[in-house]
Length: 370
Image (cartoon, rainbow, N blue to C red; front, side, top):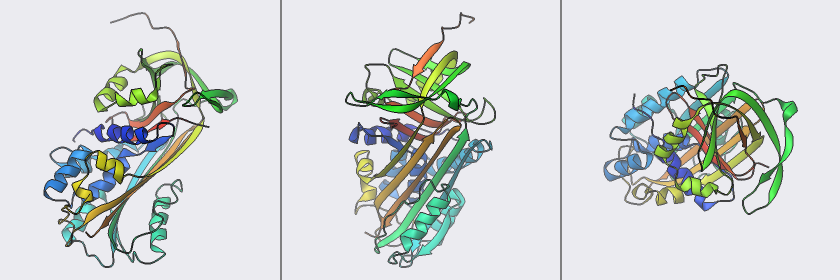
């Protein structure tokens, strides 16, 4: 099975966080990849190469996309840390995709295939209900309305809910200050955890910790938190962060005794991604030069990439969900180190990761947990 690449994940986060340095940014690169992947399998020529390059899917994108689905099934097997994904292809009544393309979407993505009258005022509600149903209500809406000229809409929904392998004691949660970008502070409910075996790493630039989910400490899914050292900006960390650097952070994690102070927080994010994706190189696929002839007749192009994500972190665990809609229109023994203290009281990065494969499912920067 091809190993997953997180290159697109960190490129996308860096691009979006640069646009809003003082705001929370939380996305599912996996959701975006799967939604765009349904367009990719119908792309041809330079358009296909552009999409595959953007998503870093290598020389055999269908194999990589199929592998992502298999990884999700394996990663979500723990009943105490479940992750699910669903895909759908929504076709306008005025556009007929090629039968072989529809079959490919069913084969690779297990996609539901539906026909809608995009000119109907109820069409957006049908898609939104599908998204809500597949995110346990965490993402109640992905599209406001649908352009009657739209030919296709690809949707993906990802939902994660997990309990900590080592839960925080709610009785130890206390109000505490959190330093906001710009120098102000806010009060947040700060959780506390102390153990002798926390997966921890530190350098002169950051502290990092990994918290497993599930019934066993060795569960596949975890939340990683990277906290810049005092005086180091989160933006500086992001500028130096790519898939290789992320591998270095994760590779340094070792069992250490220490204590963690982590805010109880929620975060929501919504963005139209086409401007950011164009800056990352998705130009032909979003222009009149796009070649999606493998999908069907007509000059198809990507018009919108809509994305919403939500995260809730509390003493018991975390719940995260995301949805993406792609709208297409025609046209050696050593002494143990001393116990650490990691106080997450300033902007930080967090990720939900499959420890077995390394795949990053969710990724974000939390500038204000209040």
